[in-house]
Amino acid sequence: MVRDLMTKDLFTLYDDDTLNFADEVMNWKRIRHIPIINHNYELQGVLTHRDLLALSISQLAALPVNDQKSLHRRIRVGDVIRKSVTTTSPGTRLKEAAKIMFEKKIGCLPVVEHGRLVGIITEADFVKFFIEWRVEKDSGA
Image (cartoon, rainbow, N blue to C red; front, side, top):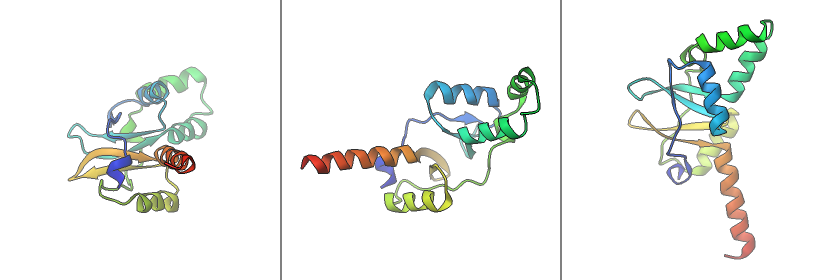
């Protein structure tokens, strides 16, 4: 089940945090997906490292570097995130969660229960699970 594999100790940001802060958190914690919540802890969307790169390349590329940095300090995460996010629940089977991620070509699924964000499951979680399963299988355990 998703509850057995998901990350429960999340790093989240508020929708009024800046892109600059989001970028710093991603680099500091070495994560590629950050759930974005409002001050009622309700999921608003997900910001991905890919979103930050796309924004920098497409919309900011023509600006001088100092202007890019200044803009990143002013733009709020809530203004650029995708608000239509596919989610799952803790009781979803891992096979179903993996299938959703594969078919929708997404790198993570926020895990929501009773309207509240309770975790996140990512591609990396599945890779780690597979490696551990394979090592266990190969060792005959």
